[in-house]
Length: 62
Image (spheres, rainbow, N blue to C red):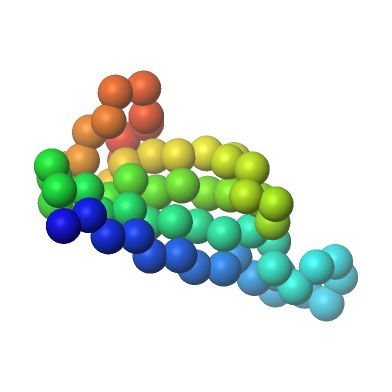
């Protein structure tokens, strides 16, 4: 089963907003790694990449 986990990217300083963005970790059925999506506070996608043995066409693999 595909699962999605979200985490907030918090600002380590007292300047600016407390939350800088979000990161979604998507566990795909087709592999044993993750598709990771980094987003701004307004959920605009900054970057996406895969981890582990996941491979998605057009997405960087680390």
